[in-house]
Image 1 (cartoon, rainbow, N blue to C red):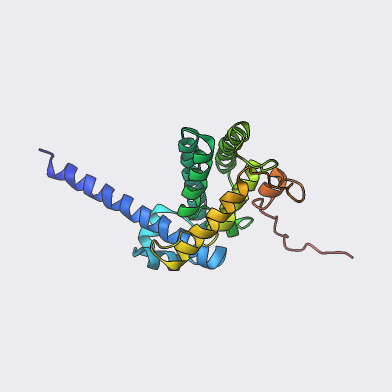
Image 2 (image 1 turned 120 degrees about the horizontal axis):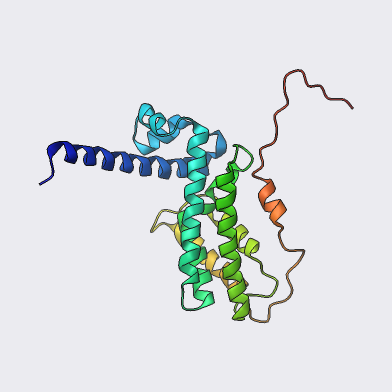
Length: 224
């Protein structure tokens, strides 16, 4: 039988993990609704935890945002790995899109350019895109993905559908989202569709949004 002190430590650890999940889930919802201007107080209130508890886990709002971004990217990577193991390319690609949209991966897009990114974030992002490229390449090889569709097209699609965060299960919003997503996925299928308009999205444009613009230093002047 475990010692009382050991059980107590495990109980505190389990409670801390539950609080952390509540904070991250609440943060995703709050930032999806209010953007980068949302306050830590709003997140703590939504999560049902005290400000002190939140700041003990995350030293600043930026730290929380970075962790939230890392979590979202890691979830997308897990979805891509599962999709690559699917029995056929279309099932894998469709499951990937559904999984990312259901989790609200695009909800963090409004944060782009509002926080300092880290090398770990960039590496994780590019790892996720490499896996998505493998999914798209496989779908093209099997002839099920519309000609001209790229991995970044799929990434943008996921972002657009997930910008408002996860839809509450059983609601009309969820039903509408699933309906429109089914229509969009059908548009990705290779069934004698016409050529896509314009050039494919570029990685430079996709990444540039997340590059923090330098703030002017005091004393800087602008000249015409």
